Amino acid sequence: MESENMTQNGGKFSRRDVLAGLASIPVFGFLGYGLVKHFTERKRKNVQLLDDIDSIIPKGVPPIVQGETIRIGIVGCGGRGRYLMKAMGFLHPDRIDQFKEWAGNDKYWKEYLEEFNAQDDLNVKITAICDVFEKNARRGAETAANLYRNGTGGQMAEVPKRYLTYQELVAAPDVDAVIIATPDHLHVPVALEAVKYGKHVYCEKPLSWTVPETFEIRRAVKDAGIVFQLGHQGRQTESYQIAKSLIKKEVIGKISLIEVCTNRNDPNGAWVYDIDPEASEKTIDWKQFIGPAPWHDFSLERFFRWRCWWDYSTGLSGDLFTHEYDALNQILDLGIPHSAMASGGIYFYKDGRTVPDVLNMAFEYPDRDLTLLYSATLASERNRGKVIMGHDANIELDETLLVVADPKSTRYKEKIEQGIIEPHKPIFSYVPGQDKVDAITTPTEKYFAGRGLLYTYRDGKTFDTSHLHLREWLNCIRLNNGAQPSCDIDQGFEEAITAHMGTISYLEGRRTYWDAVNEKIV
Image (cartoon, rainbow, N blue to C red; front, side, top):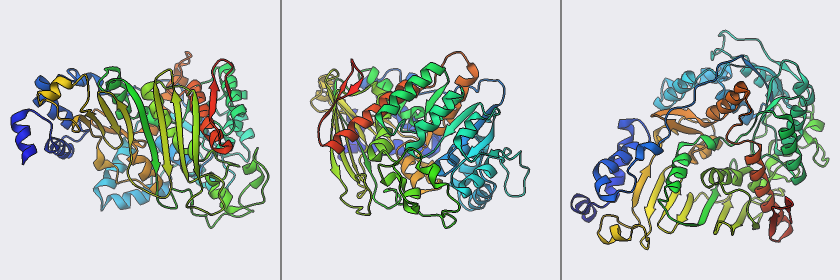
């Protein structure tokens, strides 16, 4: 009751304001923009915190650049590869059947299917696929043939050619651009081969498995002049773009500390994925899977759960921290840190893995007077979001974006004393359409949806962030004027070097430094 009276009489922001704003979302159908409006219409005269809120809300999406159909080759048709195919408008017919069945009984699945069908045609044709597992290759080809988004028995387009090796695929004359969705240790080998043939590249994160190949791929991409996009689709996330605008407006003051994290607490989140019953030495090209990794006898565990071994993986640092880092690099232009210090261990999943399941890393930016902390566990799901801490306020970035005033703020001191701003209560809130996140297909997708990495919103409409990220890459290819997308090779280089600094620190038990003059980790 006290807070309600304060809202009515004192002009402060109460919990009731927040809840009222949240409740308005389904009515308005988008964002917590209803909450923003709620705040601004009622509080603007008092707070004068953001007098041009509309200007920081991203509007619309870039139109698709017109041009010839771009012919795509897919290397890696497992879960992530097929998700990227869906983001371009291709779903396997039996998945369409399944979605239609679920849509008959569930409004979220109905919306999910409607959104997929409404997704813009990117004017691409998948002409080639490659996967070392027979089943993935077969389903990848069947998915790519579903140009018309039909269920079983519907009209299909030409089935793309399956190549047994990525070297043959990238050399194919009917492939203009290559999407790489392989395990980490094969990202750069495939990318280098594609660049050699002048093919444009979309590569899943992280950029690289080793430090030397990070330099090699950057040099090759720049020399070839191809269009390169790293698969950090969070670049398209609306709340990140709003956070960047808020910080530019100095809403939170001088930033000294940033905390980001990964919390998971189930086998799927710890990369203990199911082993497909169709998998065997006869259906998997094991030698090609090994690639540049140290030789190991055939192992289904290593094939399906490759993220658990350094032989193929970059661990928590490369696999999950890079999501957090790239979001912050997008918002704050952090670049490569001066130093990194890491610790952790294998504390829960004592299943033979070599990568840690608990990892803590501290990255120092003395030129920016700030520290970036990363903390991860695969054995607890306690909710912890991204927090950017400034002298005047902090930004909490998770499923919502909140700006909370600091009680000791200099900027807001007078308004706090006047009772206009109530410390520890949101003075700005932005809530994406959370009623959309239930209709997702896997626990992994659910995790990333909660982190704001699967969907974003423009003008009240839901967009798949991967669709927008691929669209941006394809637009740059069609423009053919030297334009590069938002997560280009330079952004990828910063991501990879930062992650490697953390990994080396963990493995060697020492602080690592970035020698910016000589471009070396020391």
